[in-house]
Every structure is written in C-alpha cells, then in structure tokens.
Length: 358
Image: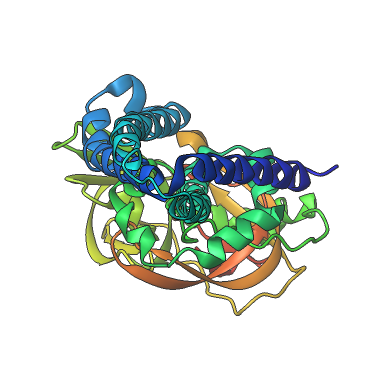
C-alpha cells in the first residue's frame, strides 16, 4: 500500500471523526468552537513568526522551526476551540425544539468537516516545507489532498503569508501555492556521466558562491551564482533579500558585490562585481522531458559540487513571491536531482555546459 493511500485513509477517518463531532455538537456550538479555533490560530500566525525569529535555537533549524510553528498555531487554536465550545454549549441549551436540534446537528456536521478540510490544507502546506521526501511523495499522491486543494479558495493562502514567509526564510521559497504539490513525472535516473563531462567541468569556473550578511537580524545567507556577462552575476532574489553586504567567491577571488536587479516575483537577482575574471556562461535553449542536465553549486554552504539531473517537465508554478505577498506564475523546470539549500541561484546546465535555467 502506497504512502498516498495510507494518507488518504488517515485523512478520511479524520474528516469523518470531525463530521461526527460536529453532528453531536450542532451548528451553534460548532461555529462557536471554530470561531475560537481560527481566532486564536490567526493570532498565533500573526505573532509567532516574529517571536520565534528571535529564538536562535528554533530560527536556525528548519525542521525545528516548522514543528514549533505548527505546534504553536494548532495548540493556540485548540485553546480557542475549547473556550468557544464552552460558550456554544451554553447557547445551544436554549434551543429546545427537537426539529431545530436535528437541523442544528446536520449543519454542524457539514460546517465542521469543511473547517477540518481547511485545517488539513493549512497544516499540509506547512509540512511541505519540512523537507521530508517520504511525506512530500505521499502528499503528492493523495487524492484527498488534491480535492481539498481544489475547493480551498486561492485567496486563502494570503492569510497565512507571514507564516509561510517565515517557514521559507531559509532554504527554498515555496513556488506552488496551497497544497498543490509539484507534479512528479516519472523519468529515468540522471546520468552520472553528465556531471563529469568536459563542458560541464569547464563551466564550473564561472559558478560562484554568494554569501550575504544582514545587520538587522545578525544573520547570513549562502547561495550560488553564475557569470552572465563581465562583472554581472545571476542568483536567486531570496539569496540576497534584505542583505546589507554581499560577497562572491570565484575561484581564489573574494569580492564585494551589489544588487543591481531584484525581482521577487521571478526570484531572480543580478549582482554587479566588476572584478570578476571568470568568463560568462553561454545560454542554451529550452530542454524537454527526459533531457540530461547538471546542477553545479555549493550545497549546504559546502565546497563546489556538481550533480547530474534529468528534466521531468516544464511547468507553470502558481504561488507567492519570495515575501509571501503577491501571487505569481513562474515558468519552471521540474527535475530529478539532489538539490539542497546553498544551490539556490546556481545554473541548470545542459550537457554542453550552457545555462538553461536557474
């Protein structure tokens, strides 16, 4: 039995349990509980990211950050749900007619199940940033998740922008909105020989490490960039966002750079570093499903490394910009490869060493 099927069974049981709870409580008590849950949860979404950003033990660890936020938001929501339920129970006692109580129960079941679907959507969207491959695969295969995502209004994602922005403040921003998972198109495994080809190895001279420092939050960020033209480096916008100081390491050179182009929607930035001696990388054309590629960069702020990749598909990713504010559509390549934080901003190379993506 696949992970997606197991997840579907668990979610179906969860939603049925919520529906039964709503039937027993009735509409009045259920609505009161939900108002309490979402009211307290929204307060947590509004306040927790800023509070946890000052707690180094949480803010500097991706998975700990995700868990702390989910536990905090859901826990605060449950407190509000409990208080709202107490209030609703007192109001429901005043509904004396049997026919009205039955209608109240049926409507309660419907409302609570819909609300539970929204909770599943919210928690699922947060868990997608936790970096667990098995969980991500199960969510991509889950039919229940796809149905939930299809019925939740796209605008709902704006409500949780600060929460998601904090989750993605390190590593990779989320390019797909809601629970919409990246469609995983099966392809052959990447060809290891591509990463070792002469053209790809030669391109490595023009791949640079990008490091930043921000005085406001006393934190740095690392990523990868590549030489577009003399003195011009391309990287991801989220790598240099909010940076007071940007440096690049190109071979034995360490140079200061400044941001001259910044696009938070496309997540692209261009840096000016006039002293860079590395040659510009040539640009290639579009690639198709099954084509071989290579991903060079500095994963996890480590040494230069190249991994082979294979193109799964070309997609239109509907999500939010790097700040989690504006809805954007990005043209992206879905690839089969091991890509980690630190690779951000690096080039996607074809076997001839030409740049076909970022």
